[in-house]
Length: 475
Image (cartoon, rainbow, N blue to C red; front, side, top):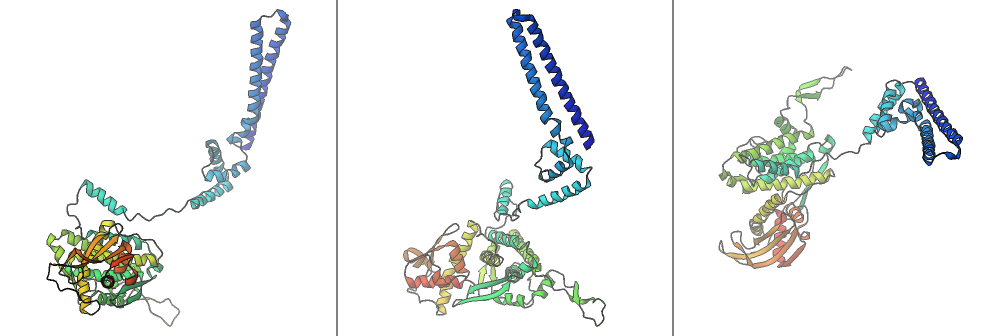
C-alpha cells in the first residue's frame, strides 16, 4: 500500500469514528429529553435505565476517542519511509514485532536504497556473533569410543599397553591439524639430560614431528612395517633423528610421493616468464610430515591389534638398549605427550595431561626402568656404590617413590641390584613428587635435585634416584 492510499484509509477511519461518536451522543441526548418530559413521575426502573444508557454513551465516546488517537495512525501499512528506514536496524536484528516486520518486508520490495541498506545490515549482524571455540574436548574421543564399545565390544580390541600411544598420537594430531605454515616453522627447544648435564637442541614444530616419525620407525621395523628412513638407517634414536633432520626434504618427498611435482624456477636472461624445471622437485611444505607420521601411527596400532598376544614381549632394539614391544609403546606414548607439550608451549596453546589410567602405565614404566638404569650409572661411576650385594630375588634396600595426583601411586625401587626384590621393611628413603613434576623430571626438563617436593631418609639414595630418573630422558 502506498502513502496516498494509507492517508485515505486513515481519513476514512477517522470519519467513521466521528460519525459513531455523534450518533451515540444524539441517542443519549434524546433519551435524556424524554426522561425530563416525563417529570418527577418517572419510575426508579426508568431512571436506572437512563443512567445506564448515559454510561454506555460515555464508554462509546471514550472508545471512539481512543481509536482515533492510536488506531490507523500507528498501523504498520501507514508508516512513512523515514520510519521504515529507522526500523531497518531492528529488523536486521530480528527485534521488530510481526506487523513491523511485514511492513518493512513490503517496503523493501519497493524501495531499492532501503533494500541495499538492509542487505548491508544483515551482513554486519553476522559479524556481531561471538566466535565459538572449535576445539574439541580431548576426552571426547575416549568417551565416544567407550560408549560405542559398551554397546558392542570391538571384535579386535586395541591392547591395553597400546591404548596410551593410540590416544596420545590422536591428541597431538588434533593439536597440529589446523596449523599454518608459520606455526609449523615456530621454534621449539628440545631439552633432555644426558646423565651428567642438561642438553638442548633447537628445531621447529615440523622438526619435532619428524623426530617422532624417525624414532617411531624403530618400533615399525620391529613389527615388520617399512622404515620411514629407508634401508640402512641408523639404529639409535639420536642418530636417526639427526639423519632425518639432515635430509628432511628428501625423506618427505619420498614419503608423501611428491618428488615429481615441478616447482623449481630457472633464471633466464630474457624478460619472458621463467618455466619450472621438471627435473627439480618441489620442496615439500613443513606440514607435509604430519601425514606420514599419522599414517605410521595408525599402522602400528593396527598391526599390534591384529597380531598374536605373544608379540607384547617382542624385543625392540634402540641401539645401546632394547625394550619389549609392550614397553616400547608406552615409551613412545610418553615421548609423544612430552613433545606435544613442547609444541603447545611454542605456539602458546594449553595442553592437558593424559588420561589417569594411561598416565599410570607410563609412570609405572619409568619406575620399573629405574633399578637397571641406576646399576648402569653405578658401573660408569655416576652413582654411589651398592651397600650390599644381594642374591637375585632376595629383599634389598629400597626407596619409596610416591607419585601424587591422578595416575600416580606408590613404587619401591631396589637400590643395590636390579635383580633384587625391593622390600618395604628395607626402606631407607622416601620421595614424594607430583605426577607432572615427576614426568618433567623423567623428560629431562627440570634439574634433578630441584624436582622433589618432599624427601625423607638417606640423602645419597635420594640423589642417586633423582639423577637416574632424569637420565632416562633422551632426544
